[in-house]
Every structure is written in structure tokens, then in C-alpha cells.
Image (cartoon, rainbow, N blue to C red):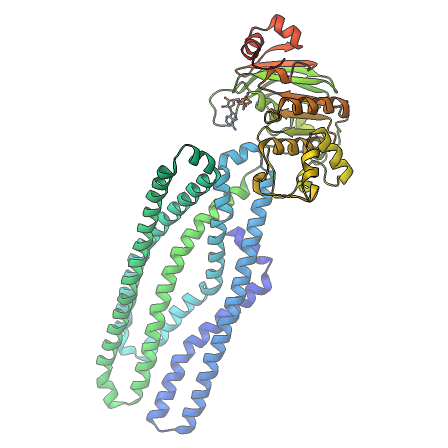
Length: 572
Ligand SMILES: Nc1ncnc2c1ncn2[C@@H]1O[C@H](COP(=O)(O)OP(=O)(O)OP(=O)(O)O)[C@@H](O)[C@H]1O
């Protein structure tokens, strides 16, 4: 709650305005029955002047209440929108500071739900708070006291009404709350299944899984429908129940005041006023109950968002760091790394030194730890033990911007963002000119297909690069990686979707254009690394051999095994 109060402070004018309006609304609501009573008394006394005077006052009071209600809603909605936008942006900003393991801990889908559904709940909470938090208790207490003062002899009618409405509200909203909780759960699942299905539509279709997928979706969707119908049914029962309770209260009030009215005509006005207060007491309990139910759901959402905001990024950079990477020498010193939640390390006691400008091949079977090693060089994770240095600077003491500029990581699964080709390539160098983009795309063998597009670098890239082929996406990713002429370039199996000729041309261009760059090439195919100055052979997280292709063929059994299985299949 402290978080919301802090955020609301930034919109103090609107918050105070909205609270003032609720006070005006509640004052008019409490005053109106009294004025009604006076009008009725004036009618009984045939006092026309008073009828007009009090009648006009009643209209003005109702009008003021109406205007205050409209202003309150506008201000409350404005504050709710702005506060939730602030929290959403703060959450997103926080996520940008997260390391991979922070994100893996939450899972991406879960983070998206927190930044969308949960924020909507918070929006509702702020809106409800500003509209009802002050109004409902004042309305309840005020109406209770005024009803008691109006017809003190009927005090017990008020008490019975309060008890009956309270018990019904607790029972109905208690049940509704449970159903709402289930609706939220199934809504998340329906979203998840739909998202997964659409993302994997090709797999679904090629494995003829449409019927199974529909069955999986329908099962969850039916549960969602069941709980939604239950909420509808509860509403259907609740509304007539309150009508019956209020009608009963009115009948009882009239019955017991009929005697009094024969002695004093003013009692008729008092009964009308009393009934109005009874209605307001009932409404305040119903709205209070609804508010409590929605607030408890919103509190859960608030806690989920707080969890994101309170998470400390487990990789932080020293903003004062002035050490600069200038060459690209890389040194692993007894590095062990274990992913959080895994029961054994993915890399074990790795040590090696690389001089700037060298090309390094990394080979090994699936799961040997190649990608993990690459990600450690870019400091996407920190080693569990040991240290990594670039130009004798421990990565933990490196300057963040300098490190990000100096190390470019190109992943096998090329990730493109919606926007233009230029937007994507410029992720590698914000202010890159068209000439620079042309040079980078030439190295990546992407220039030819970009030139064939009508808008060339201005061509649109759809979400996740869906309008490009696997090979084209890889070429664009390589362009993004090389455009800043990094000191260290890591190609993590990032030429796998390229034909042999294009792959060769990329390698030649890299050798020629990025001469001083230390290049790590992770590859499944030995053919991709035969020319490397040094090859690291990983086996189950261990560095089992280091050397040139010739040296390894002669000395490493693991390397020879991989080489033999590929020989004949590849042109070496
Ligand atoms: N994010 C992660 N969380 C937990 N464990 C992981 C994660 N990423 C990889 N691993 C584990 O770490 C080990 C090494 O994985 P890594 O991706 O580095 O292998 P690789 O040699 O690149 O494999 P491949 O050639 O198949 O890409 C594997 O056992 C894998 O299960």
C-alpha cells in the first residue's frame, strides 16, 4: 500500500480534489432525506412558500451531488490511470535491470501477466479507494445516526436491517471472491494456451495436433465458463434478496409508524426520510462488501508487482567503473558455473587465455556448456566460482556501457524486434549511418537481400521477424553484431541457417573487416572452426582439450570422435 500512497503523492492535486468531492457527495446524500422530510411536512401544512423554498434547495443539493459525483469519477479515473501507468513503467524499467536468472526465476509469461492483469487490478483499487474509501463509512455512520434520530422508536428495524444485509453480503461476496480467484487462474491458463498455440502453430499443424489442442483449450475454457456462470448466478440471487430485505424493512417501518402518523402528520415525512436512510445504510454495506472483495484481490496483485519491484538484480555494474576494454584479450580463471535450480554445474573449472584478434572455435556435444560459456563472456551471468577477465579487467568491475559496446553476442535463434531493418541493425550502434549499415550487412551477407526490398533499410520487420526466413534473420542478427566493430564477437551457432557458401563468405569478410576483433565461433559443425587459431573442446561442462584443428585431431579423443562422425557429411 505504501507503494500506491507514494505514487498517489505525485498526483496530489487530483487526489485531494477527488477526496473533497466525495465529502461533498456524502454531505448531499445525507442532507437530501432531511430536505425531503421538510418538503413533505410543508405539503401536510399546506405551506406553499416553504414547499418552493425547500424544493429548490433539494434540487440544488441533488445537482451539487451530481456534479461532485461526475468530477470525483473523472479525477479518480485520472489518478487511477496515471498511478497504474507509473507502476507499470517502473516495473518495466526494473525488468530491464534484471539478469537472465532474475527473469528465469519469474518466467517471462508470469512477468507479462504481472505487468498487464495485475496492473489492471491496481487501477481498479485506486479508483475504488478514491470513490468509496471515505464515502462509504461516512455514509453508513451518518445514515445510521440520522435514521435513529428521525424515528428513534424504530431503532430495532435499523439493527435488523444492518444484520440481515451484512450477513447476506458476507455470504454472497465470500462465495464470489472464491469464484473470482478461480476465474483469474483459468483466464491466465486460457491466455497461456492460446499464446503457446499461436506461437507454435507450425508445429501444431505439422504434427496434426489441432484436435488435441482444441480439447486442451476447451477443458480450461469450460472451467472458466463454469465459474463465470456461478458469479452471474450469485448476482441473480443477490439483487432480489436485497430488494426483499429492503421492501420488508419499508413495510415494517410503515406498519409500526402508522399509529404515530394518525396522531402527528409530520411522522409521514419522517418515515419517508427514515426509508431513505435505510436504503443508504443498505447500499453502503453492499458497496463496502464489494470494495473489500475487490480490494483483497487487488492486494494480491499489488504484492505480485511489489515482488518485481523489490527484486534486486543479481548482476549489477559499478557506475563509477572507469576501466576500459581496449583490446579484447579474454581470460577464464578456474570458472565454474551452475544455473539456479540446477543440481550440477554446467561449466567446471574452466581456464584459458585468448589474445585479442584471435579466432576461437568452441565445440562439444549438445549440452556440453558452449552457450553458457558464451553468455559468461558477455556477463549475462556471473561465474559461481572463479573469474573472467577481459584486458585484465575482472568483468565484475567492468564499465557496463563499455562492456556492452565491446562484446557482441549473436545467438543461434536470431531475435528481431518489430520496427524496420534499420531499427534492428542500429541496436548494435545507435547512431549508425546508412553507409555503416551497408558495410555491416555486406559482412553478414545480408546486403543483397536488403537491397532487393523496396524500402531497403526502411523495410518493416514484423514481431519476432516473422516476415523473414531463418537465414535472413541470422544475417540481420550478424549485421547487428558487427556494426559496432566490437572488440569481441561471439557467434553462437549463428550461421547454422546459412548455406555453406554464404557461411564461407561471412567468415572471409569477418577475417578481412574485423581483423583486430577476438572472435568466438560456437559450432556444431567442425567445418565451421577448422580455420580457428584455437579450438576449445567442451565435454559435459569440462574443457577437455585446447589446440588447433591439426593438434586436436592428433591429441583429443573427444574432438576426433566428433570429427570422425562428421567426416564425409561435411566438406572439410
Ligand atoms: N537457463 C538455464 N537454466 C538451467 N539450466 C540451463 C539453462 N541453460 C542451459 N542449461 C543447462 O546447462 C547445460 C549446458 O547448456 P548449454 O546451452 O550451455 O549447452 P550447449 O553446449 O550450448 O548445447 P547446444 O549445443 O545444444 O546448444 C545443459 O545441461 C542445460 O540443461
